Length: 315
Image 1 (spheres, rainbow, N blue to C red):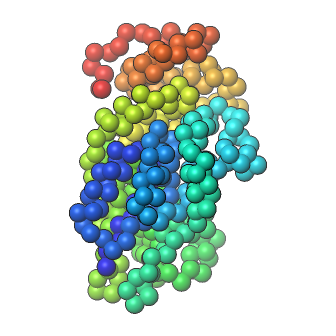
Image 2: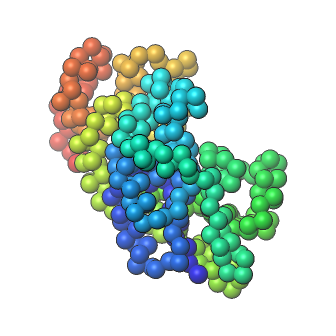
Image 3: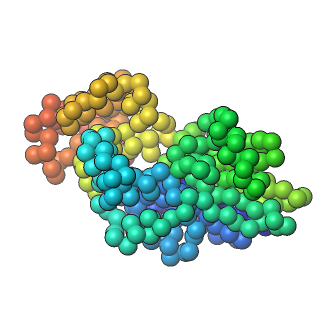
């Protein structure tokens, strides 16, 4: 028996298409999405409709929770208020009412029946949480939670890296990320589980896709404007397969947080300059703002966006 598992598409339709094409060539017995199908990139609605059209079971990830929080503010009022959540607000506005309703009905876990009762439990971060991964460390609480689960094989996503570990009688495995992988390559990642010799074995797959198509979808949309400066960091994560947002928020951005959009723009720009990425990102950002220049006329960051385009900037 073979099970194809993927997670963390994050609205990257070109990457999803490439992964599904590769999966189809291997003819698995089941296909499951381990959450974070949507947010932040502009293809979120198309990604969701593809999953539904193919009847691919999907569990709820923390980014599905963000979409729900936008439409149900009692879940997290900050989503509608704080500048750092501008990409979430952009993505949520791209989703149809039908999609939000379907996301609201998602389970936290999904079980795939395996041979002789050797089932596979699919979750996003861990079986009891959409945002705390067992790969970050198994403390006493996590150990207790895992021990209570009868299923021996548990698969998830969330950390955007491919990973596996045998822990006690459990096989814990992560799919990596389809749409926003971190590591040595920007290629899409997914997982193929195969049952042989009485146990599940993981084969981590890496699939090249048309990254330029996703970048065009981003720059053709208003993501870099309506998503604010945090969207700039997300674009650079896509281009480099390197973490940007978490290091910026944890180590570079001041506390208390900036209060105005122009302050956020300046701090993100300074961070990108400090790590040597501003020259590469600036043309994308400037191009996105050219049609909405009035939005930046009062911003101290505005002039930085309109300096000459580097001739060696990747396109």
